[in-house]
Image 1 (cartoon, rainbow, N blue to C red):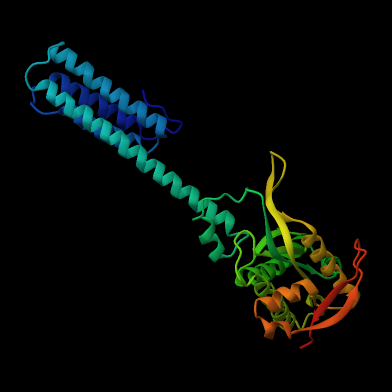
Image 2 (spheres, rainbow, N blue to C red; image 1 turned 180 degrees about the vertical axis):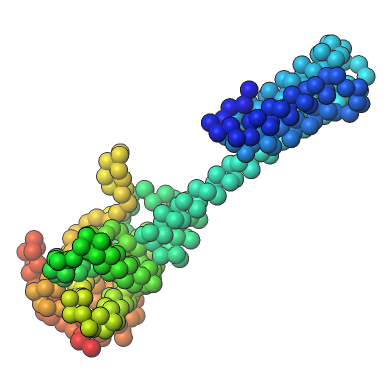
Length: 333
């Protein structure tokens, strides 16, 4: 009678339905007794999905009809038909309202799950914007972005000699430090890369200060790392260095992967250059390196003070690129 995989409330609902049926059939009360089936629907709704709620409503209506036939036959005289009609209307309205309420609750739960999932990769401000837009993230598009790569230099050496739990804790602490800096500057984490991460500023929702936010993020990472090393000054093994590389250019964003596993990401030459720039930090012994294209974006946004925090390192030929690229490093101090 009632469709459900979790019959916690079905027993009371069935008993109540039987009582109402007997009362409606045997009692001489002159009111719409069958309208009490509303209580059956409400009780069973705790454990039923939409299909089960509809079936419950149908069965309640069927019991109402059966009771009418047993009591009055097929006559339609007097007030009995009107009382039955009131019962049918009550049952129908209750089913509709319960289903709408269930659908609303399911949508709220879905939004909550979406927020929780998005919060892993996007700042709170971006999460709020994403849950309100109608265009899904999976729609592929081209967009200008500032791409940032951050990587812990020599993490293998730091991990050697430590237990697996200690390595994972250290990694979580460091990635937490990097993530907080990204989110504070309204960036998005594209992916975690072992002992580092890739962040983008722009996608999925562009702003007028994407390059500025990326530069501020680099400064935040630099400052937070300085505090980290100060806090662990008594333990030289905990001293950490992070290399940061940033480039600004056009990227393609969308879902990449297979049907079994899709990942929202950005790809393109801008991503490759940013990765190469981060790797080149080790060559120039720099904490933060940015490209000439990024500096032009920074100046175009009017962030002149931030631009003065970087100094030219000249042109360098990065791995995989024939033409040399102008690089700038963060000034010491």
